[in-house]
Amino acid sequence: MSSTTLINEIQELNLAYLLLAQRLLAEDRDTAMLRLNIDPQQASLLANLNARQLTRLSRTTQLLCHLGVGSAEQLRQITDNPREQGLSHIHSSLLMANPGATPIS
Image 1 (cartoon, one colour):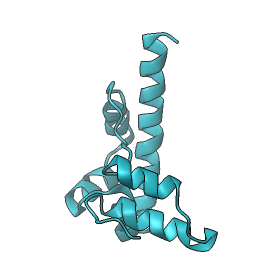
Image 2 (cartoon, rainbow, N blue to C red; image 1 turned 90 degrees about the horizontal axis):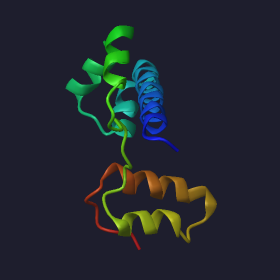
Image 3 (cartoon, helix red, strand yellow; image 1 turned 45 degrees about the vertical axis):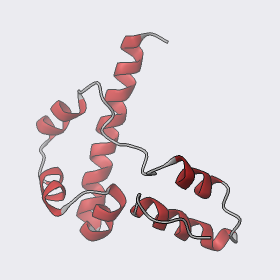
Image 4 (cartoon, rainbow, N blue to C red; image 1 turned 90 degrees about the vertical axis):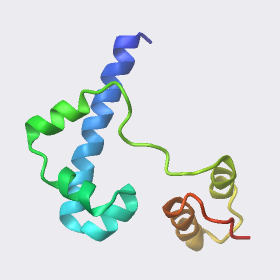
């Protein structure tokens, strides 16, 4: 895969991420801030970007979204979770909401 193709895919992902972030913020600002791991000022800025600004921001060659796991240990806990299926998503959300959290055994 060429470098140009990868950059184009990053930019498309960035735009999709920004549009999703705006939609989440419009529907439930507090939950969106938790899920996006952003503060109120960032939330306001993202929510108020127009189409031109969204496009300009998405055209960077760096991913705007990031893996919400603070360490390899947290990633292991999420992927190897022995809890019941009904509780595993809650445990994963808690781990990802606080990257510096102590593991829950």
